[in-house]
Length: 374
Image (cartoon, rainbow, N blue to C red; front, side, top):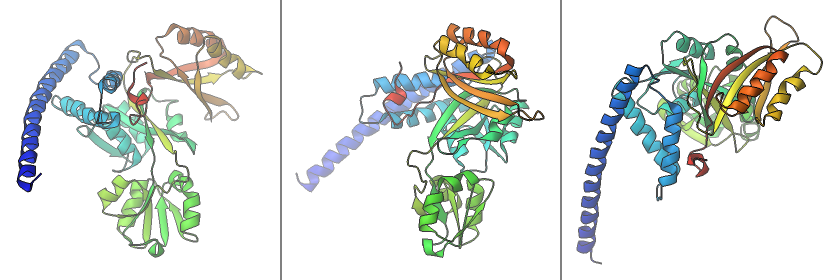
């Protein structure tokens, strides 16, 4: 094919794309107008404006319809922004998160709400809870556990007194990078990071930066701020932080475990759980009586009613030495009879039972299973 013929073919293909883009734009605006009408109807009925389980159903349906070549992950990313932009037409959602900007919690918040939400960074996890409770923001995002380092104690402890509810969860693969203004590793004399990040990269640091001092800071983004002001310093943080603070990525994926995930919770003031999706999780906070075998008797009804326990973690009961609270995640929705029966049967063994939320379970959007309904 001659250069002239190739140029003509490209022009024809580009013209075709332009026509498709015009059609897509027309349909997107039509969809947005419908979304605005739905939002107004929700306001009139007093219904929840943000319904994460509905969004998960949309992503699942699109995953089943998707025939490629776009991946399910790409389709989800596109529609996350379409939905976020449509919501913002009426009133942008305000979301507090453990800041500063470019933390992994910030990434998780963007993953859940899209870029058109208003993101409010705060300094501590208790502040995220407080902002949600006071109504200063609509929702909050906090880390709750890491696959290699375990639970985030302060997040769990905050649920004891807080009235907020868990309305969704987000799971992100944590890929740590070493960031610096330095041009090479040999120039680095000190590494700053959040304690969990240092723990997750301990082996890499020992191997590649032996003898270099490490220092704990409040967040990885704060570490990036320090590194941006000191050529001999480096930070462990996300690639997003490198872009945000103008740093070089000296090394990528330096975490010791390849599959390193952090789970985040989305907090809201909803007084009732959302509708069940068929792939749900319920989080509970239990205080049990001080009796021999009490934990066994408390957990037994879950097994008898075929309720799968996904996680159990104990925390000291403040002000009462050697007594504990138990945080439990189970499969199922609070509206399901099997779970309701189990909760009724454990009441005699518990001082208190607190339902922290029923919500749709997170699925990795990068896989076909992550967007598939069951």
